[in-house]
Length: 163
Image 1 (cartoon, helix red, strand yellow):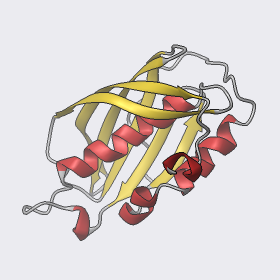
Image 2: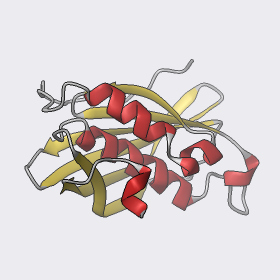
Image 3: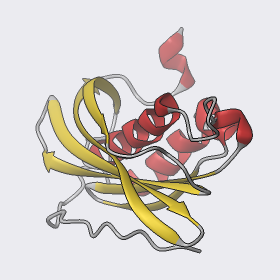
Image 4: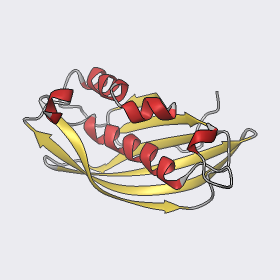
C-alpha cells in the first residue's frame, strides 16, 4: 500500500469523548456516498484523519481524471472526521463551509485525502486538508482545502437525526 507523502503537523489533542474512535468508524460506515465511491477510512487519530479512494471509471470526468467534486467530497470527509474526533459525546458534525483549491488534475490510480485540525472550538472547528494523487507509484499534491465545521450539540450522529 502506498504511504502518503503528507506528514501531519497536528499537535497532540485530547478527545473529549472516550469512544471517539468507535463513533468515527461507525459514522463513516453509515456514509452511503463513501461506500458508493469505494472510499476507505485508513487512518484516524485525535485531530487527524486519512481517507483513500481507489480509481473507478464512474468517478471520473471526460478526460478520465477523478472529477473535482469527488476530490472535494473525500477531503471534506477527512477534515470533518478530524474535527469530529474532538467533539464531545452526544454531538455530531456538519460542514459550514470549505474552500478547495485544485492544484493539479486528479490523474491517477488512488486519491489520499488527509484532514487535520487547525483550531478546535466549542461550536466551530477549523480544519485543513490535502489530497495526494498517486499514479504509477508517484505522488503529487492535487488539492488543498480549508474548512469550517459546526458542532451540533444535543444531536447524536445517527440516522434518527433525519427524522
